[in-house]
Amino acid sequence: MSKIIVIGSSNTDMVVRTDHFPAAGQTIMGGEFFMFSGGKGANQAVAAARMEAEVFFIGNTGGDIFGHRAIEMLNKEGINTDFICMDQEKPSGIALILVDRHGENEIVVAPGANATLSEQHISKAEKIITESDLILLQLEIPLDTVIFAAELGARLQKKVILNPAPAQPLPDELLQHLFLITPNETEAEILTGIKIHDQPSAAKAASVLLSKGVKQVVITLGPKGAFYKSDQFELMVEAPKVNAVDTTAAGDVFNGALAVEISNGKDWKSAISFACKAASLSVTQMGAQASMPMRSDIS
Image (cartoon, rainbow, N blue to C red; front, side, top):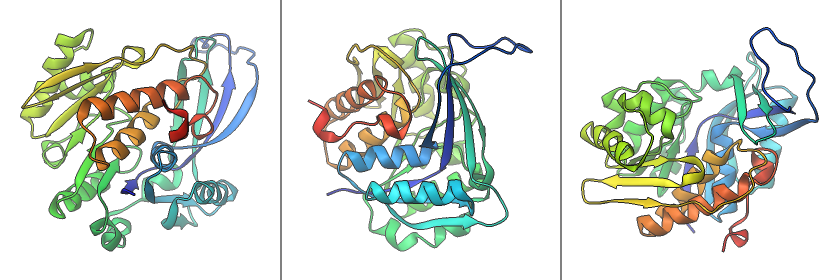
């Protein structure tokens, strides 16, 4: 069984379904309200655990009801939570999510205790990081902490994967430590200045990232699938066609599943195809962690 370290955020997602998104200054009547466990880090940890990896999660929550609930839910998934710290001064992270009738979403995150995850928290877990196969990171925690974790992983000769979300410019000192970066179209454009509209433009953006020291690039393209490029070769993998109900956390499912397949030694085409199938299944149900498939669900 592969051993994966996920370092990142834990949030509680508060979701409202709506026919359409409101314009600025507009109030509209929504539909059903849901509350789910979320946060990109926790989501990717759950996705990896459901793909039958041994997962350790490093993160911060508040010492409130949301923090206790988040840890309880992760434990139910079989995820090791020994390195989650409860901040008694900050609230747990919260995400406010609108989902329209097409399954698209708009999200605002209040990071709370996620913003206090520090280098010291990562250092306390160095022993288990040393014993791991792979480190999976996102950007809902402080960038300095992400850089420190990537540098530590590289020094320990671990494969470091960064899902660069939420989108922001990144320094080369981070990129050069990455085994793989997995931006979506918007994130790839912010990182490279190249608008992604087809496979050739995705290849150009990937080339820019490779030139900055990243060893591999996977650009996710929503329902179209995902594009891979390294210095050796490139390939396009199509995603299964499904009826999307809620796209929340589809990228997290993709990253969690891809990390597991990479740590299992699968080739890139097989690993990306598997991740695309997992992500496609997740958008057919509401919620973040609630919508994530098990390995047995993926044919």
